[in-house]
Length: 367
Ligand code: ATP
Ligand code: MG
Image (cartoon, rainbow, N blue to C red; front, side, top):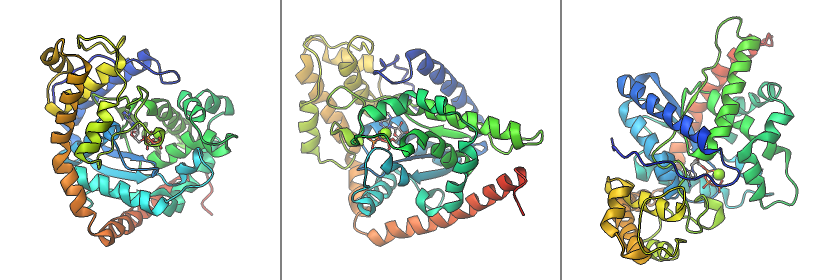
């Protein structure tokens, strides 16, 4: 495990405040200790929307943790959140292609479908049925306050905000709780959603648990890069045109990084609060090199942004080369990707049916 401990990145408007993130980071450090002691105690659920290929923000924000937890022996569920694509657009375009791309990205970084379950939530009816009782456990005001929902509304492609947008954190609670996951490796933007999941679990247990707990209160595991910035200086995001995809070629990566926003100061130093764009690039190079961002900055000194970008490009291309090669090899066999999903969906359906049965029994609705 890396020993990097970079200081906090600054928060963009609408993201959870630095204090909330600091507390989540402290909790993540405590969690790491418990994971080291007994990784088998953890059931992990996490996932992504099939809105495009995964990028470096995903990789260092959560994917690398997913694979690490799987390899340590935790049980891993990866959800391809296809219904949630519709939260911020009218039509989910090129869905089959995007779903396959997500499976490919996971195989390329080391998710093993023999040990882990990769599934799409539209194929798991009992998971979605959990949404109904869960919606009754949160107030409209709680949903309206959610800072990530506000941020996503600001970036939405729709002129009107749909009900699905407001309720999708509760849908996410169903995604996480259907398999009773107790650990969720996520980026910083997901912290408010995870709070809603914890609230739903707690209220369900209080209201229907008869003194016991039907659901665990899952914890967020943040990585060393909980908010990697894109080339425009805002959160790297599939749908904001500012991302460097894991599958990008070496030349395209170089071009994108050359165009990344930095600042005009020649001396390169790691200062996340005042120089967030430079800090995010330093962090990226550091994560690829297994060093600290301060060490990378010291190596560049007063050589300026162009030298920083050269370092970042070389580090990223070197780090991603084996991942890209594996991805290209898996891309040859689309039938295999489909089989992974079929089997994952089947496993997820069995788990969801069991949980829904327990929920209905707890609610006295099992006639
Ligand atoms: P979209 O723009 O379609 O919402 P996205 O790039 O935000 O896509 P998601 O599918 O919403 O990606 O997020 C999947 C997971 O990756 C979440 O856990 C999220 O926190 C994490 N993640 C996404 N972007 C970043 C980033 N820039 N830095 C760290 N983690 C990230
Ligand atoms: Mg997102």
